[in-house]
Image 1 (spheres, one colour):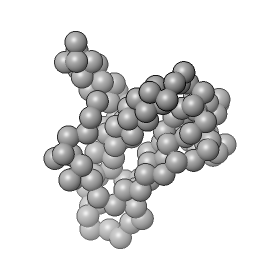
Image 2 (cartoon, one colour):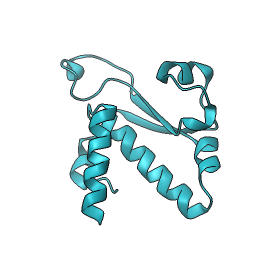
Image 3 (cartoon, helix red, strand yellow):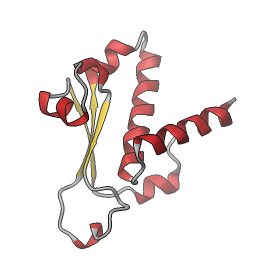
Length: 114
């Protein structure tokens, strides 16, 4: 999945960072026990939240977890694909999509790719 240009232009106040592994706090926050299960994490106020533009807020943060991705992949090519999909997934959260909504978009995209 590629992020369309019109979506990239609408992204603002978002930092994308890479961390070695998720913290215990981050794992607990999303309800995951194994460090290697969490590939990425969105932290912030989705663009669909009322009043977002009227507040002074810190940048949203998308974190990609290096070890989790490397443990899942079998090649550099797979690493790149997982990163691309993980960033796309977390950006969808930035735009207000729930996990269920993102999964539906992923299914729709896979059907389109066939």
